[in-house]
Amino acid sequence: AMGADGAGEFRELDKALLLRVGQLQKGVVHESLQGRYHVGRRPQAAKGPTMTREAALALVREDGLQLGVLSDKLRGDHEVVFAALQQNGAALRFVHIGLAGKKEFLMEAVRRAPGAAEFIKNRDLRREIQRALGSA
Image (cartoon, rainbow, N blue to C red; front, side, top):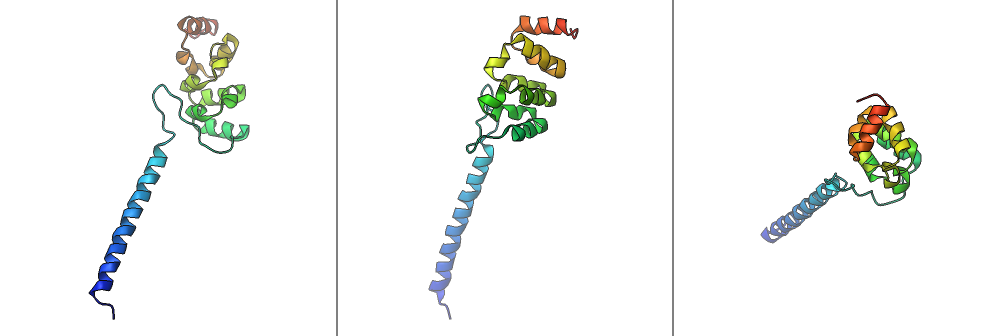
Protein backbone atom coordinates (compact mmCIF):
# COMPACT_ATOMS: atom_id res chain seq x y z
CA ALA A 1 0.00 0.00 0.00
CA MET A 2 1.16 3.52 -0.75
CA GLY A 3 1.58 5.93 2.15
CA ALA A 4 0.82 9.64 2.22
CA ASP A 5 4.33 10.31 0.83
CA GLY A 6 3.47 8.48 -2.40
CA ALA A 7 0.33 10.56 -2.95
CA GLY A 8 2.27 13.77 -2.39
CA GLU A 9 4.85 12.69 -4.92
CA PHE A 10 2.13 12.16 -7.50
CA ARG A 11 0.67 15.60 -6.82
CA GLU A 12 4.10 17.15 -7.45
CA LEU A 13 4.40 15.20 -10.70
CA ASP A 14 0.93 16.36 -11.74
CA LYS A 15 1.88 19.97 -11.08
CA ALA A 16 5.08 19.63 -13.10
CA LEU A 17 3.17 17.99 -15.95
CA LEU A 18 0.44 20.66 -15.99
CA LEU A 19 3.07 23.37 -16.01
CA ARG A 20 4.79 21.73 -18.97
CA VAL A 21 1.52 21.34 -20.86
CA GLY A 22 0.80 25.02 -20.20
CA GLN A 23 4.20 25.98 -21.59
CA LEU A 24 3.66 23.82 -24.65
CA GLN A 25 0.28 25.38 -25.26
CA LYS A 26 1.81 28.84 -25.03
CA GLY A 27 4.47 27.74 -27.49
CA VAL A 28 1.84 26.52 -29.91
CA VAL A 29 -0.10 29.77 -29.64
CA HIS A 30 3.11 31.73 -30.17
CA GLU A 31 3.94 29.77 -33.32
CA SER A 32 0.48 30.27 -34.77
CA LEU A 33 0.89 34.04 -34.38
CA GLN A 34 4.04 34.04 -36.49
CA GLY A 35 3.36 34.78 -40.12
CA ARG A 36 0.49 37.13 -39.26
CA TYR A 37 0.59 40.39 -41.19
CA HIS A 38 2.42 43.31 -39.67
CA VAL A 39 1.33 46.66 -41.01
CA GLY A 40 3.76 47.94 -43.60
CA ARG A 41 5.96 44.86 -43.41
CA ARG A 42 5.93 41.68 -45.37
CA PRO A 43 5.04 38.68 -43.27
CA GLN A 44 8.07 36.46 -42.77
CA ALA A 45 8.31 33.50 -45.08
CA ALA A 46 8.15 30.16 -43.35
CA LYS A 47 11.57 28.67 -42.74
CA GLY A 48 12.33 25.55 -44.68
CA PRO A 49 12.62 24.49 -48.30
CA THR A 50 11.68 27.04 -50.93
CA MET A 51 8.14 26.65 -52.16
CA THR A 52 7.65 25.30 -55.68
CA ARG A 53 5.95 27.48 -58.25
CA GLU A 54 2.96 25.09 -58.32
CA ALA A 55 2.57 25.26 -54.53
CA ALA A 56 2.87 29.07 -54.69
CA LEU A 57 0.13 29.25 -57.34
CA ALA A 58 -2.16 27.05 -55.24
CA LEU A 59 -1.47 29.21 -52.18
CA VAL A 60 -2.20 32.59 -53.80
CA ARG A 61 -5.32 31.27 -55.56
CA GLU A 62 -6.69 30.53 -52.07
CA ASP A 63 -5.49 33.82 -50.57
CA GLY A 64 -3.83 36.45 -52.74
CA LEU A 65 -2.20 38.16 -49.76
CA GLN A 66 -0.03 35.07 -49.23
CA LEU A 67 2.03 36.54 -52.08
CA GLY A 68 3.73 38.41 -49.23
CA VAL A 69 5.29 35.27 -47.76
CA LEU A 70 6.83 34.07 -51.02
CA SER A 71 10.43 34.46 -52.16
CA ASP A 72 11.52 37.45 -54.26
CA LYS A 73 11.71 35.15 -57.27
CA LEU A 74 8.08 34.04 -56.90
CA ARG A 75 6.91 37.59 -56.16
CA GLY A 76 8.43 38.54 -59.51
CA ASP A 77 6.78 35.65 -61.39
CA HIS A 78 4.02 37.12 -63.56
CA GLU A 79 1.74 34.09 -63.42
CA VAL A 80 1.98 33.84 -59.61
CA VAL A 81 1.41 37.59 -59.23
CA PHE A 82 -1.58 37.68 -61.60
CA ALA A 83 -3.15 34.71 -59.78
CA ALA A 84 -2.69 36.52 -56.46
CA LEU A 85 -4.16 39.76 -57.81
CA GLN A 86 -7.19 38.01 -59.26
CA GLN A 87 -7.89 36.61 -55.80
CA ASN A 88 -7.19 39.91 -53.98
CA GLY A 89 -6.16 43.18 -55.62
CA ALA A 90 -4.49 44.29 -52.38
CA ALA A 91 -1.77 41.69 -53.07
CA LEU A 92 -0.24 44.34 -55.36
CA ARG A 93 1.59 45.76 -52.33
CA PHE A 94 3.62 42.52 -52.13
CA VAL A 95 4.66 42.44 -55.79
CA HIS A 96 8.42 42.35 -56.33
CA ILE A 97 9.91 45.84 -56.45
CA GLY A 98 11.21 45.11 -59.97
CA LEU A 99 7.63 44.82 -61.25
CA ALA A 100 5.88 47.36 -59.04
CA GLY A 101 6.82 50.40 -61.16
CA LYS A 102 6.63 48.85 -64.63
CA LYS A 103 3.81 50.39 -66.60
CA GLU A 104 3.34 47.42 -68.97
CA PHE A 105 3.17 45.00 -66.06
CA LEU A 106 0.73 47.17 -64.10
CA MET A 107 -1.44 47.66 -67.17
CA GLU A 108 -1.71 43.90 -67.63
CA ALA A 109 -2.27 43.39 -63.89
CA VAL A 110 -5.20 45.83 -63.87
CA ARG A 111 -6.58 44.37 -67.10
CA ARG A 112 -6.70 40.94 -65.41
CA ALA A 113 -7.65 42.18 -61.95
CA PRO A 114 -9.38 45.59 -62.06
CA GLY A 115 -9.45 45.68 -58.26
CA ALA A 116 -5.66 46.01 -58.21
CA ALA A 117 -5.77 49.54 -59.70
CA GLU A 118 -6.46 51.29 -56.41
CA PHE A 119 -3.29 49.73 -54.92
CA ILE A 120 -0.91 51.32 -57.45
CA LYS A 121 1.11 53.69 -55.25
CA ASN A 122 2.15 56.13 -57.96
CA ARG A 123 -0.95 58.29 -58.42
CA ASP A 124 -0.06 59.57 -61.90
CA LEU A 125 0.69 56.06 -63.12
CA ARG A 126 -2.55 54.81 -61.57
CA ARG A 127 -4.59 57.50 -63.32
CA GLU A 128 -2.82 56.92 -66.62
CA ILE A 129 -3.55 53.19 -66.47
CA GLN A 130 -7.17 53.73 -65.43
CA ARG A 131 -7.63 56.16 -68.31
CA ALA A 132 -5.99 53.81 -70.77
CA LEU A 133 -8.24 50.96 -69.68
CA GLY A 134 -11.30 53.19 -69.54
CA SER A 135 -12.04 52.45 -65.89
CA ALA A 136 -11.89 56.02 -64.63
